[in-house]
Length: 152
Image (cartoon, rainbow, N blue to C red):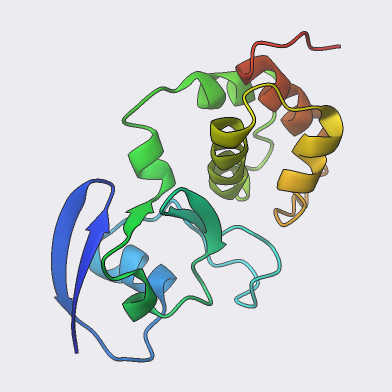
């Protein structure tokens, strides 16, 4: 089947299987390797992308469900304001880096809707993003820093 995708502001027309997942299309067809295949079951958040500004797990989403909608990956976010990415670096919230793209995607959506989130709001917004390194306190501080709040 033919699908037209808007990914990171660019339009792509692709021939794909109806059962193909968005993550596979992003990584294999568009060479966007920021979203990662972690669990493949939608539980870890490593594959998170923004779909019309809302974080979704791309490992479960059929590519056809993204047709006509704006898909933004970590690569697309890196083209704009990088305050959040800079805050992750400043707070040493990267650790191994595997979960970082998904964490930043989810945090971007949070900050778009809640510019000065509380610690509880940050935890809730990032609950679907697992970090095997346990960098949660650093990730939380990075989001606070990016929002312009004091980091303690």
